[in-house]
Picture 1 (cartoon, rainbow, N blue to C red):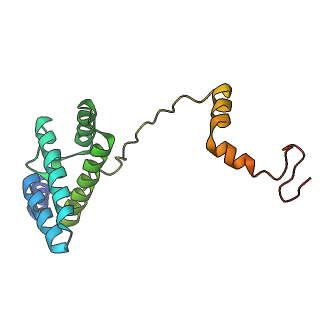
Picture 2: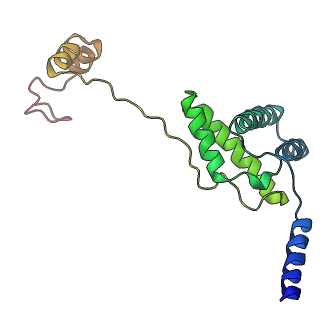
Picture 3: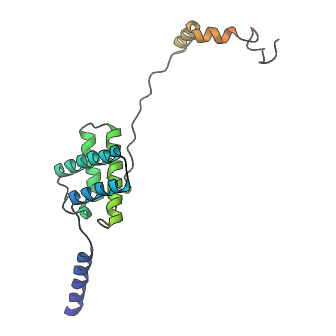
Length: 171
């Protein structure tokens, strides 16, 4: 029995030694270097740098473990989104950060720094749009009576009686 447990412990230790661990900071710098080597534009690299720094600041506020990229899980990303919504960040800002984070963690996954992308399954947020008030029939009639468009359009009618007129045939 002891030998079996010892073999399992050795397997676990070998697994841990074989895997490369990176802190968020180290992986961040590796990612930026990768972007430069890949030939991404200066503005794109600045975008990643800015957004990933903002993500790390919020992660620090939320006590997210940043010493190992593998420790960042989906629930930390959800906490991040909740925090950004509480701070009344624009939906487009949050979505930009989600895109940058997803790409960063895809890189970490590719390099073996993490086993799963915590952004998988996290969808972009949708902005709610409110529909304005519609015109009443009286307002619509007044608007079309006064409109230049109305006068130009109806001055070129093929006939005076719209109910009996067919376009292309003058009756």
